[in-house]
Image (tube, rainbow, N blue to C red; front, top):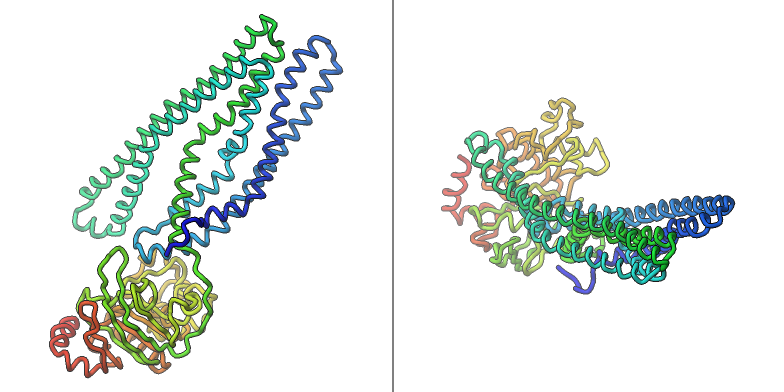
Length: 569
């Protein structure tokens, strides 16, 4: 799953903007040179203009300063625009990759994929395009500003170094005292949000069974654990932040006092005293920005590691050849499947062949691995060993986007997507009314859809929660058989259906058989088994029997009587 540890896709993406970052560095160089204009201006005013009483010199110096400040403003605007361009470029390069990787993550580690990864990308972009990053471009100039102070007088330089060391110590203490609390707060926040989300999804159970107060207590405990830890971190950070800010202001005032002392003793000029104060402010400015934006940097670093790990664990997939499904002949070669987050295989070496146009039912008791087998056939869950072949081609080397349009799948837990009924049926491809209606009629939902307020243009929101389980299942069936796929796989497609829905499902299967579509269906309903060609009986992850339907059912009378009839009651 992972690739060479020395390779980082995120780092490589950032490196692509290296030349643009260098241009930002050049602009920062010019801006910092222009930052010397105010102290030089003050130096000239005190040491030249006031001594000479020359108005012409004052006017000329002022004009030059105004022009240079306008130039500096333009340079800062351009620098900001360049950084925004870099941020957008990085976002464009990575957002699609993160989107794809999240789906891979969800398949191997269910419930762990969420939108927080996109938020992490946003934090990276905001850090790169915000003021925080300017501190890193301006930080090297601290030594230059301190060097200039030494040129004025060594006392200025040593005072500046002392101030910088104290501020750095404060920054390190701030990091040490808040980092652990912030990490714990972050984990508690995720835990609190996840618990609340899970509770809201079961709001009907919580409300009807009087569980809300008990659930609230558990959520409160998690939420206030996060809140208290965050408050502790914020309190610590505010203490050190205020100490840092006031110490910096004190230092800028004290350097004026130091300058006055040196001027009294004729070791510096009054102009140097004022200029030293301004340069001191400039020397501390990047450091002050680093301290104030330290949390942004911590968030950036955390987001960087999070996305880097995601992209490393789920590298970009190769673009395999787009081979069409011609016959949908399925061949399983001793496949073993271990579900995500488990170590024991559920499917333990199954081999079978499903011919083109056959309807094959997969039966077996609960927990025997029927749904797992289907997810292995569809390459939703990776195989531990063995191969799944469609038309003799190994499915892992087929272009999933391409063959996906030729496969229909109806999972046991139906999820519809935000959009119209038409868009859900056609899988959000370009709307083709004729094909949509054909699929709806084959699924037996055409009349049902017409009864909705806006027919096929009725909007579905919140994963289809406005629909009944049966309605969602029937729309999901229409989506599965849209545009006459070569292979259709149905997992308990009648679990929520009434008699009308059952009849429509049977008609759909008959229509698929007439179109020579290969169908794999998990079911225990006898009326559906009657129209299947073959039955695969799974027991404890093994293929106990696979043959023509009547042969398998006759050989397994006990299963037929105890299993099928029980489920048909």
